Image (cartoon, rainbow, N blue to C red; front, top):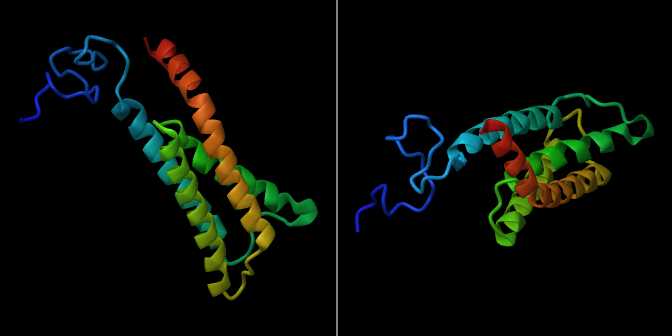
Length: 154
């Protein structure tokens, strides 16, 4: 069966509506593409900054009082939070957490290849715990944030 606007169930924007927010089912909730593009661009920017800072020849944040661990935790919390807002199931959330944790392991391991950097197990622990915390926070707050954003936009 060919895909048409009538049988498409992914809530794509109805091009005949003219307002950009009316969906094929008649509701006025923006589709994933409205939020998804913003989330994708912001996630890409965050990922780029985190990768650059993780592989910078000298450490950027001081290790005094373990402030860099707080930075690692916060960065990976934010990195996991954004895609977790769009998780449709627990399986998706687990996949997101695994991807974020893999990124954290990979970037921390890549520091071993740089002459001026030394990988740290405490940094790795902060990366992993931030990834898991961000995924949980995104899943829990996602429905609330989406409904609040819908109210602001309509």
